[in-house]
Amino acid sequence: MESEKIRIVSVVNDFDFYKKVVNLSPCLKTYPVCVYDNTKENIGISERYNDFITKNIAADSDFWVIFCHQDFGFFEDPYDKLKDLDKNCVYGVIAPKNGINLIRILKSKLVANMDYYPSIKIDIRGLIPFSKHKFIDIHKKPKRCRKLTRELLGQISQGNNNFDFQKSGIFLKEPTTVSTVDCCCIIVHSSLIFEHNLRFDENLKWHMYAEDFCINARRNYGILTKVVQLDCFHTSTGNLDNLDENFYNSADYIKKKYNIEYINSTCID
Image (cartoon, rainbow, N blue to C red; front, top):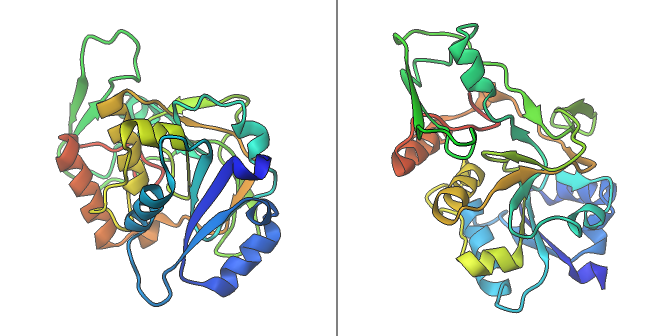
């Protein structure tokens, strides 16, 4: 049965709002949904996702796992597209375009926020075919500059902390390789998770766990991350002005973990 080919995992701390998302997303009623109740005990999202993996994925598992936020849903049946995808990749619905920040920095049109990135070390492995260099280093004098404009791949219906949607991102005709995907929705096949024992880093409880998952998959197992076009929605505004200290601490953690100074993310440039 097709209903057994997808399992959806969400962590919920507002069930009244989540019910509205479910009513707008028929597939949340079609497929098995594992909902973690965070109203009483606020456990990190990465820990919740790992709990699902440990308890539900085995050698004979054969289904797509959709890890998504409580304010995320689909207007279409995702299996219509997932059934034809390569099971050996990590997928998402929206992602930063590879190389866009690098190009703009090199052209000196815009400079990243150098208060946070005084030296940028860009990992180009897998981004530029046959490159002789693993990294490109760009040094600028520390100063306050406005952030780069992010160019996002994958078109979704974006809310403003409500259901008043507007289209955001570039519509894709086919799956496209990227560095990371946004944490609002991460899609991985159970067989890939089991084969490589993939897990989310529980040090990243609320932020950047999707970026880390993608970087780890590529660096340690050669697994590509791709963005796939799905008719979906995300009610969160995605306002970058509300990023807190915990977010930047999470970014610093990843930079130290992988010895990089640049993270290709939908959240920061």
